[in-house]
Amino acid sequence: MSRRPVIVTIAPTGGFLTPDRHPHVPVTPEAIAADVARCAEAGASMAALHARTADGAATCDPEVYRATNALVRGRCDVVVNNSTGGGVTGAMRRETEAGPVVDEEMRLSALASGADTFTLDTITSYVDGPDGEVLMGTSRRLARALAEGIAKAGATPEWEVFNHANLLVDLPALADLDSAPHVVNLVLNQHQLFQNALPYSPAVLRGLIAALPPGAVFATTVCGPDPTPALADTLLLGGHVRVGIEDSPFATDGRPRTNLEQVHDAVELVRAHGCEPATPEQARELLGIGS
Image (cartoon, rainbow, N blue to C red; front, side, top):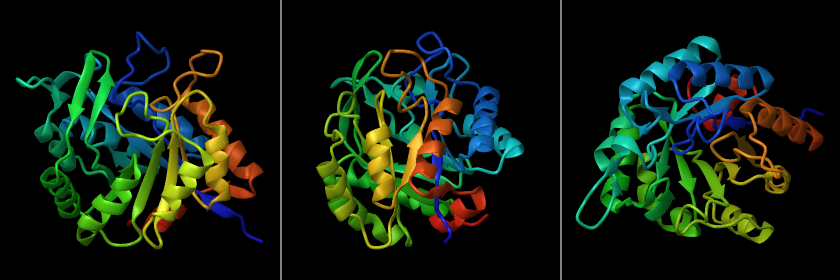
C-alpha cells in the first residue's frame, strides 16, 4: 500500500530573529538559499520565506524576495512561499499618531516577487515585536487587495489562520479570488506574540479542521520549543507539517536549533506515522499549483 505523501515546509528565517539572538538564523539571500537547499535534500518540499535587508531588518521588498527566490530555485526545486506579513521592524514598521503599524504598501509590494504561493494573513492583531507592540491591521479592503494581487500574479494564496474567524468569515468572503483546493496553514501557539491567536490543544486543532472548507489542503504551524505533539496530531488528522527557526528557534532546554535538524525530526515523525515526505512534484500536485 502506498504511503500518504506529506508536505514538509521549512520556515527558515521569519520576521523577528536576528543573528545576535540566534546563531543559526539565515538572513541574507545566499544564506537562506543554502539553508533551504540542505533542508530540501533532507525532505522538505516547500519553503516559507521572509525577506531581510542587509542590516537584518524585515522587509517585503520584491527585489530582495526575487533575489532570494532565484537563489533558492537555483539550488533546489521546492515550492516557494513568500510572506505578505513581513515583520515589524525596518521598512515594515510605520509610525503614526496612534502608534506603530505594519505598513500596508510594503505588504502589498511582496506580490511582485514571483513566488509560487503567498501568505494571505487576514488577521488584525497587536504583535509584540522586538520594540514593543505594533498593530498589524488587515482591513477587509486590504485583505481583498492582497487576494486580488495574488490572483493577478498567477499564484496561490496560503490562508494563514490564527483563529476561527479567519476560516469562517474571511476565507468565504474572499473565496471568489481563489480556486479549490484552498491551501490553509493553521498557526497555533503564537498567542504570546499575536493578539487573537490561539494556543494548541487537541480540541482547538479539531475545531479549526472542522471549519475548513471542503477539500482544503491544510498544514499546521506550531510555535514554541516542542511542536511534536501537535504535529503528530496533525498527521493523524490528514494534514501536513511546517517546522523551522521562524516557529521553533529554541529547544526545550534553551539550545538554539537549526533548520536542518528540525526537518530531520519532521521527516522521522512523518515516517513514524506511516507517511512519506512529499517530493516537490507531489507537493505541487497536492497544492494544485503548476510546476
